[in-house]
Image 1 (cartoon, rainbow, N blue to C red):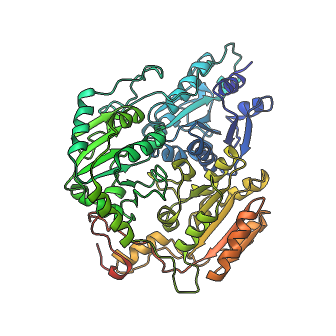
Image 2 (tube, one colour):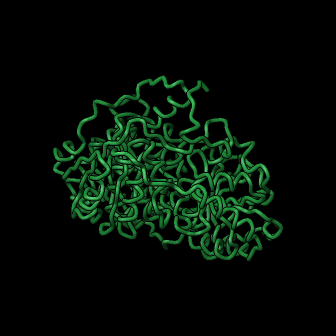
Amino acid sequence: MNGAELLLRCLEAEGVEQIWGYPGGAIMPVYDALLDSPIRHYLTRHEQGAAFAAQGFARSTGDVGVCMATSGPGATNLVTGIADAYLDSVPLVAITGQVPRALIGTDAFQEVDMLGITLPIVKHSYLVSEPESLPQVVHQAFATARQGRPGPVVIDLPKDVALAEVTGQPQRRQAKTRHLRTRHPKTGHPEAPPSAEDPEPLDAAVLAKAAELLMTSQRPVIYAGGGVEKGSAVDALRSFVEITGIPVVHTLHGLGGVPSEHPLFLGMLGMHGTRAANHAVQECDLLVAIGVRFDDRATGKLSEFAPQARVIHLDIDAAELGKLRVPHAAVRGDLRLALGALGRSLAIEPWRQRCQDWIDRWQWRYDAPFEEVYAPGMLRQLSQQAPTGSFVVCDVGQHQMWVAQHWRFEHPRQHLTSGGLGTMGFGLPAAIGVQIAHPRATVINVTGDGSIMMNIQELATIRRYNLPVKIVVLDNSALGMVRQWQECFFSNRESEVDLSDNPNFADVARAFGIPGLEIERTQQVDGALELLLESRGPMLLHVRIDRQANVWPLVPAGANNSQMIEESQAVTATP
């Protein structure tokens, strides 16, 4: 066989059943070999769409997503998706075509240095120099992508390597077990993982210190993020919450770690967090940080974040421990083991009651008295009517924050959004990957009129494969989040946020062969949501909302999380 055929056999050995991609010259040998492979290829209409679709598969399953593109512009069109996966710790293998080895470095047609371009945004990159190395390269690439703190890996395949005759056998994936793998705190390079059967033991002295901090605290708060799901520790977190009785706040990617309806869940914290969550963190005397990185969107002004709190930080990645906030106890390792070791009942009933009072005082209201569609209320209603096990896939902007605030979350894997990179255009192609991974599930893409235009061509992909994705476009004829900040902090001087020349998105959907419906009044919501959820195939709901609607509360840049402002407090002032 040739190198391309061996590559596909190696992918099959890793359990790969689907790839998202777009063909071209340098990758053509692999596309030829695909005709004889059981791996199913899904043709997206842009390489960025392929990367995000592969991410949708990976984020919703926990397994590695695979995307593929040709050299030059095909490869560079994957870069945003690769960077997005890196910042959100998503296991991804991106295979790119490359010019023949003899032409590398000559500025050949469609030649780019993918190793150099992706160096800061991958866990590892490979330029395959010999066809015989393919089994080892592919096996290592998948192990690196999935182990420990997951992330993307690039395999750059020269065309002549793909065409070369080769003998060899794939290295078989041993088991679908998550190994521990961390990055060295100074170099950032992956450290050797211990075996899954014999995980690295936790530091007993650190655990003892953490236990002491727990037992002496009066006002503890759990601050849990995306690392909980990445570490397969959702059940461990829920057990820890039940045993300790500690109130919980979540980051954007942590949502669903404990269900939204849990009595100890205070909401999302940070820039658009709930008042209960932000006040609890600012008042706590112990912060139990689990799988978080103290991101600025969550912490606000870092020097004033949880100012009275001692900190226990649990993470698999040593590079995160002490990076932004020096903990009093830094527990490195498997979150499941750590949470199991630290669980104990705490006598903190007065604190729990105080947090419950905050929840009761600042409950959301959905009885907006106007005819226009009230986006938070509609999204809340949609989440309540969606079947159990539904997935919500968001783009970036105001709609993203409204979903985070008002959706009922069951599990972190059922909420997909671009967090670290904040990539508009993520949602539609990511929903494709989710729907292919979960063909019987209800998959809802909530997007904005700005975001959907970034990758709207993927409506063709949805139609081609008849994927029953439900698309909800919240259209305020503006780049809403940018407009809100210009209103609040730039004296309402709007600059390049006007999208009043948007098309009718329902008409656009129908042009792609997808049913579309448009609404703009509250009394239309019930019927529209019923039609959307009962549709057996794909459907797009175009929802026109008030241009001036904003996301509240809001923590201004440079403020701490207790300095949230509401609509009645908003002022226009240059920052």
